Amino acid sequence: MTQDRDKAREEFEAQMHAEMSDRLDEELEMEIDDERMDEMLASAGVAIPTPEDMDPRIYFRELLRLQGELVKLQDWVVHNKLKLVVLFEGRDAAGKGGVINRITQRLNPRVCHVAALPAPTERERTQWYFQRYVAHLPAGGEIVLFDRSWYNRAGVEKVMGFCSDSEYEEFFRSVTEFEKMLVRSGIILVKYWFSMTDEEQHRRFLMRIHDPLKQWKLSPMDMESRRRWEAYTKAKEVMIERSHIAEAPWWVVEGVHKKRARLNCISHLLSQVPYGEVEHAPVRLPQREFHPNYIRLPIPDSMIVPRRY
Image (cartoon, rainbow, N blue to C red):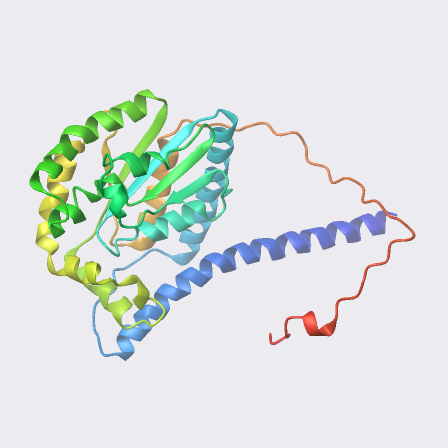
């Protein structure tokens, strides 16, 4: 009997080890993708120095630890019916998407949503500017991450001439009051700007140009934003100066080193919400029912996905 228990425990531990390996593989796939793009640049004869990054072992250890804390934060948000909104702003290729992916990677998609709104429709252009964003705000027990937000008006719309001067000024008259209303309503609002150097954006754009798996990320708007680097810099400086308020301050993430930026951002986000452990009732698997007359039907070979791997 003891031998059977020991064997069952060994099998369970082996399964848990395999599960943890799968979790690491998921992150490794994304990291290998970054390395592959560097190699493609080098083979194309493009010599752009890669910023020195951190030891992968330290990175993975800290990432998994922080993701464990994010799960605790998620439980706390659900348990206390909190409403958390996080804005991610920054230049194209600044690393916003990478951080958002790592935040959501282990979380429940029913609790943590990503709002990445497309260009407004003709109807939306006639609405109150903030109206289409309001529809994505969280209910109690939810987290919403905005991959770009209402600050489009202060950035891309201003630089590209998609809004008038009067609309631009009205945005700044409204945005601070809008955000104060959100905070008064009980929403926890955190705003991040991902900062990067001219040289690093140049490198990342070249990586995408030479990578057929990433070329879809480059739109004509992205290419034009690269040309207007200085105009975007000025717009960003005005945006932060005019919308940095005590109720919803801006936080700047130094994004040149991708791994460090991810860890720094997640760590800081965790510090913005006082959270604790939520007690959960022990989970016990129920005994499966067995019926002597039940026969599992065979699956026809024609329905089986070919075993190519």
